[in-house]
Length: 166
Length: 166
Image 1 (cartoon, each protein chain N blue to C red):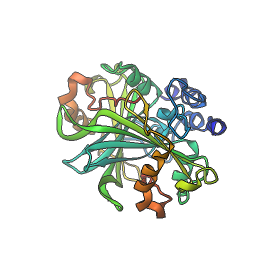
Image 2: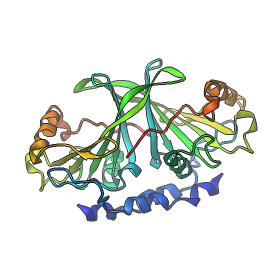
Image 3: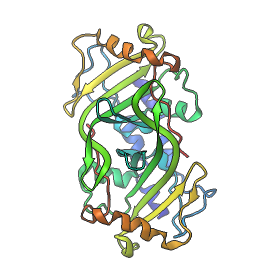
Image 4: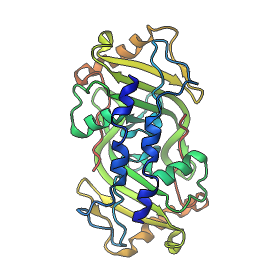
């Protein structure tokens, strides 16, 4: 089996190197959709039972390095967190398992303490649905994000606690 | 922001190239812990409300390519699926959010139709806890895995349906 691990080893880095998907419009605050985010590594998962959604939280290399070293309060500049959200669905063969249904949106937090001084050092952006429609009518939408994250101000405005992974 | 995407682009592939972690004992059927699995990309997530666990399902490059092209029945030889499992915990600042608590185990399915003829073409293995203790007293433990997967025989013995990710 061992040789198989090697055969496609460069695919991930090639995908990560791509800079931007210009087909997707930027968020109203000018943030562009981070390219290659679906190739990022997993930091955590969650299930919100209030709005019936499943989530995975991925990070770019800077964020994953911080998560694995426990250096996340504050997260270092350059960290990007991606939260992918799906509506709950029931597994067709395991009724007590909740699995991803319709894709809801991808949300991003981009850490740049000098740039995003009014929102805790984080740039926020969200693209909705498989169509990746930017969220927000104008740049002020970020206050909606920021205000929701105020309860976790002491965790550098981040709800996610990195999961233990051996 | 764009230059940041480039700086650490090679880290993922370097981690994937590593062959094996020899500190972890093999499973009783001889399967070795796939190296670098925690750098693999996400295929799905799930929440099992019967045993109160959250999961992420990751795949090696072969599995992710199959998942993204919809070519998973059967999954191609060389596919490896990794399921990381945590006990449910409540988020300290969002009571209706279930988040990863104690790490339970990492489970693997390795597709090799010619090698694993008695278990649907899949090699099964599991390592328990952060200590990564191999599961099973002897090689027959795989029948426990296989029998549990029989209800999804028509889905190539795999419970996971790849999540939609734009």
